[in-house]
Length: 161
Image: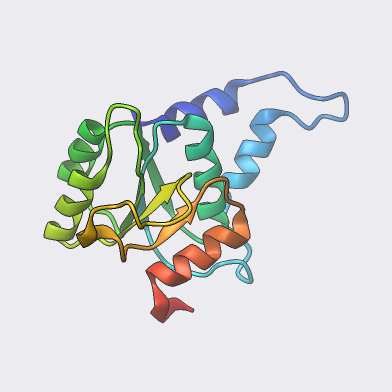
């Protein structure tokens, strides 16, 4: 089970809510609904998010859903990411650069080899210290918001803009 499935299972079962009735399950369910067409910027069906921070991964998931992505799988390690792409087909991937256990550059090269578009997500503000062959890959700088994600997606998929 990937992070996103665990989160959905958890948030749908949490009964704790504010007195006004706004509980976590309601909010999470609303975010999983189809986005308003005026906010949709892409037609990607399946996206892989490789991120070792669940909170950041969930933020990315919420924003990607608002942008029109249909299915998002979240994994926390390169090993899980390799298993995911062996089992599923992805339209693109978002890769956290520093995973704590190491960097995602080797996996990024694997995605290049098999033709899956991707972009990096990092607290680093530029790609100058990245390996030379990966310095031109689009970068989304943490912390990010919906506007930054949309600009990043337009750099990743210029034809969509």
